[in-house]
Image 1 (cartoon, rainbow, N blue to C red):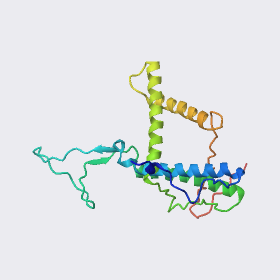
Image 2 (image 1 turned 30 degrees about the vertical axis):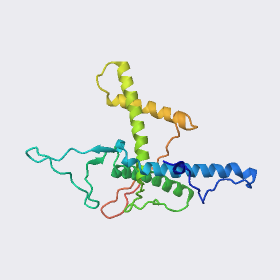
Image 3 (image 1 turned 45 degrees about the horizontal axis):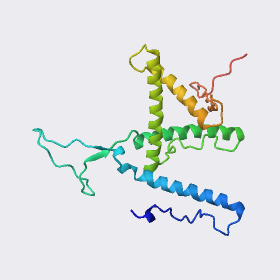
Image 4 (image 1 turned 45 degrees about the vertical axis):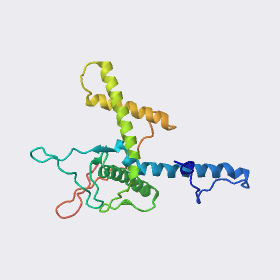
Length: 225
């Protein structure tokens, strides 16, 4: 492989500083150039990660009822033998469901803020019939999956360490996992943000209590104090 294959491309949108660039702008331009070059390279890397053995698992050879080997099934479009299948921890549907739930929570909080500031969207900016479904590229899905696996490995390792130190149970219990999650979350908050270990309290939107209507369609009378 030639050295030219490893050369970073020239970005037209974020060019690097030139010899005639003003001294006050050199650091800013070079930082933007390096950041976007790394972003582009990371996108290419994760887009090709699905072909690595880490994200693939060999299929069981097909056999008939008598144990005789059968030919591998072929892809209906490319015609290639399908000897491998994807080896993933999170499916695209699961990730979209998680993202949709997060978007719904943000939308509910946004609606509460709009009602407080009187900026409209009293019922919420998210349509209840057509909720927000964020889409992810293949590379983004794998990056999120890698972070999720690392988090779960750290959590389970902490739970196993606590179980071995106590020595009362042979298996990790649900309560032990809950305590391990609190420890891991506290460590993450302490090392990745400038907030107290307790973190920033989440402001839940106020629940709307619907009054029961009578048979005649009118609201029940208020009780006297």
